[in-house]
Amino acid sequence: MSAYSLRGLNWFKALGADAKPVDGLPASLKVADGFFAGQPVRFIAVVADPANRFVRARHGEVGLLEGWGLAKAVDEVITADQDKAQKRALIAIVDVPSQAYGRREEALGIHQALAAAADSYARARLAGHAVIGLLVGKAMSGAFLAHGYQANRLIALRDPGVMVHAMGKASAARVTLRSVEELETLAASVPPMAYDIDSYASLGLLWETLAVEQIEQPTAADLARVTECLTQAIDDVAHKGADLSGRLGATNRAASSKVRQLLSEQW
Amino acid sequence: MTDSASLLNKHSFVELGARQRAKALLDAGTFRELLDPFQRVMSPWLARQGVVPQADDGVVIAKGSLDGLPVVIAAIEGAFQGGSLGEVGGAKIAGALELAAEDNRKGIPTRAVLLLETGGVRLQEANLGLAAIADIHAAIVDLRQYQPVVGVVAGSVGCFGGMSIAAGLCSYLLVTQEARLGLNGPQVIEQEAGLEEYDSRDRPFIWSLTGGEQRFASGLVDRYVADDAAQIRQQIGDLFKLGLPTRQRSQQADLYLQRLARLNAEPQIEPCVVRDLYQGERS
Image (cartoon, rainbow over all chains, first blue to last red; front, side, top):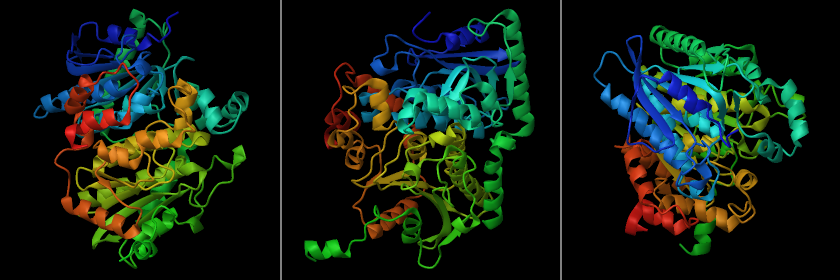
């Protein structure tokens, strides 16, 4: 087994088999332009680059180059499609183990690099691009905020390796002054603390979850199912709008709606 | 004025709680809090984990005016759970920014100030905190189309995690010497990367990399101000008068990629290297 996940890369290659690769970006970014049944799309994945100049970002983490690079890859699309009636959809293939943790990263302002990525995805959404996040592996914390969380629609594949969280278990335990065992016990009874995708789905943040046959290396049937789902998601955005309101409404996220309602009444 | 007299006249901003900070920034008599503590909209997740919730969930939303202009302030209480954002506190900030953007679409020029004292996501509400922060990011980018969003990191908690990304999305950022701004908290970096990479107990080292003075000298924030409520208020007013920036810091990918390309990433980094790389001879 590889020291890093290859899911993002494999799904990128499968979905973008006929797409045209985009150059001029860091080696840790895979970007290509293709079509889904006449709809132009840009696929974007962050992948491991074992030769990354930044040693703390060699396993697929979102670091300085990745943050600014994602921003560039998305900005290109916004600018190029500015006057076009049909905007390219952006498909963020998400398999990101974490943001990069390191001295160089903090010193050089990794927060600003990740802000640039989130900024571009959000502006793409506001400019009328469908932005779809496809979760095929880990979607962790700052890495997910930079790559995927600004999507209009989030789709997760059903697999134990697909997980969303704010922090790895060891660090989360240290920060909250708990043991990893205590953390796991709590996570089992508190849905927002859990690491599994079903608990995450109960928060109402996903538009769809999909089962596949081979998560690591998609089969032809997997590819067909996911492509169909992505196409439906793009269509859904076109009909229901580009904001993030579709994420509200779940029982396990009721307070988020209640707060908004009260604020609006008191505004 | 002598030094001691000016010291006596100074009103520390850092020492104020979230509600007092909001009051100190708004025009006298205009402070109006939304979802105040008496409404007791609290975290539905903390009690079952043995953590005592707080009646405002550690976030104060206040409307009023600043130099006569309509403004909403979202102030995070660093003293409650390290300023961490859970579902309710996060939704208060996101919701307030969303309503400010709606105001602008209706012709009401509401601006926003974010007072950021936060470690980021509240881990007891993990995924709901993360989701709320994504909403905050979205709302800042939306509101910023119409009016500047000013972020203030005064200290002493600093601004970390997903909210440091929110800071990076602000039109303008203002910091004091007490401030720290960075993605990852020192403890977490030490946990993930080891003591040699990042010693979380070496405070001078941490401030030298992520402190307010260094961030200003590196061009990663816009104003470096003394810990004085009147001066901070004045500077925020000045930033609003500037209007929208000609180019957002978070929209300069080509520039930062060029700068990073010039860096020799091999040796461990020193603060002066960042200053030189980002600001050239100016520092």
